[in-house]
Image (cartoon, rainbow, N blue to C red):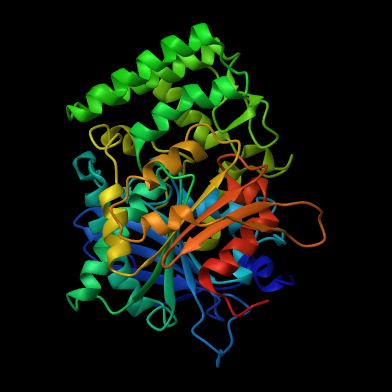
Length: 456
């Protein structure tokens, strides 16, 4: 796909629709041709969320049907979508600022959001303003969308798809319901067409209970370790049932520590590998805290996409910051925010299955997609929480055969899909936690199907 405009845009002058100052509701800047827009929305006094919009070169002025927009929600919690999702997964340019052949911009307009406040380029003016729940995040992100309907000309007539990864799935569930309710109340003029949950942390209990049988089945744990790991998982389950959210998160971290010790440090994002061996990861030094280790691993997992000359930290604090112009002068971008991660300690282990049921009841398309070799948000765990849905179409959905999917000229099945009414499930073969990185061809084909993009 020829996309020279995005590579050259780093050198182009800017136009400004508003100036950033304390108390402003929104400020928007962009490239002269309107192919990119970005800015801050002050969602609460002192709390600033940063967004970046890309207009697809495939969008035409008179499309045969409405052209879709994908809003990407990164996980962590506290990982930067504007940095990681954009430059390391699905955006138009890679970390070397060269065109990405598998960019999702071929199938939709893209919006990346550094969410919640305190993540990436987003910031708070004092530390009391971090969100402590998924729903607080949803209120802030809904405020961003209310602003963007006015700031981004294409958004109001474009079907919107929330696409999430990892903890971002909890953001997408709550944000999706928040948007749907706002639309139904006449407070937001937008079309929420779908929510897609990639290896998403929707039900921490179900994922935790899946670790031991999965790792036993692939020989990363033996029976002795499996018995002890199951006991630790049961402790997590009991604490979740009792509403002991912070305690359950600590027990979950203890379980991950135990698994690391007994499995030879299996890579929790890809059970075929050891921690630090993944071709898109770098080793992380032990900090003595399982949660800190996991959080640090998340932020560095994709980093070998960085070239010898460019790193994600380097470009985000260098040429990208210079291009954007509106990032506060002394502000330092980071891949992962510790403050955001720990502020959500009492919400981290809460499930969001009820929100998925609510979205299904509204007729919103819900897609679950999962990488075959992921552990932390395993396919087994995703299947388990899907079976807990109260949606009236579930029994029929579960009874249907899966369909194999192929991709391009490559041989062999790349994925399976099952669909019924507005629920869809993709099993992505050969992928770990980061599906667009591990299987870019089938991921691009999948997003085309999800959005029903007019582009071939």
